[in-house]
Length: 198
Image (cartoon, rainbow, N blue to C red):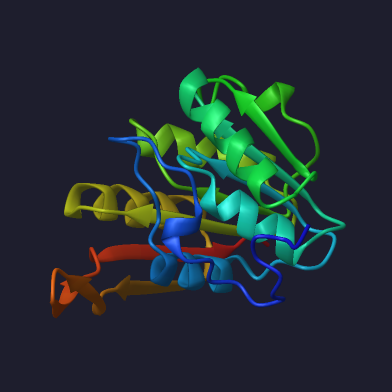
């Protein structure tokens, strides 16, 4: 059976992932920026906190088949969705953990080389806890969908003395067909903050 995504490059079309109503999913264009910001090595250990639909764990697992991806989700139904998406793409190196961050961090396997924060209710304590677990020279990447989150992450990065900080705002549009017309659908603007631990 031919794999659903047989290519070596990232950027799986959104439609190929199973989705659930109301569960956020990083759009393909945003995922490409996130994967670039993570700078994963072939045997990297990645923690994805608030993994949602599981798009990043799947893409990272395909890019790093010898790596270990840990997807953390607090909702059991969403965690089951991540597992189904991993099965769809034939990835076996994703460990889906049902738990609340940061309470579950002590039980997570592996020391992370990179951590992606895709969600969280109280970002400052979450970022502080993640920072303590992150390996030296590891990468920390966080998404902000609003200015409050952007402020919290920026302030936390300063407090934690994150080095080589980069901030990118995604945007743009994607051509889509609606009926007999083609229209440009906007990509939701997202701030992506990244940096390193020394």
